[in-house]
Image (cartoon, rainbow, N blue to C red; front, side, top):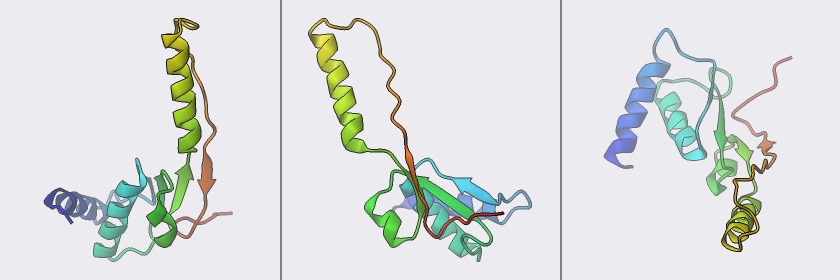
Length: 115
């Protein structure tokens, strides 16, 4: 673990121990979610009972760590970006085209359904 990761975990741990502690966190990506998991462990919080957690990317370790995550198809994302670039190079398109790729939520043990 790098000194930057350890510093981040310390800061997250302090936040999780504060009176303003959240009930859930949606992390910017799975790597950050992993830091939150470590911080929650240091703060003696149980995921998902004390803190629900969702990451973004669905990296390989997400399934191993039982992390609920949002997945976007990286192949399709790259394909769409390449196609737009090729259209611009060929002069077929002179403006930015907005493409929306629907994400998929992969529900695992770091979150739970509340009814």
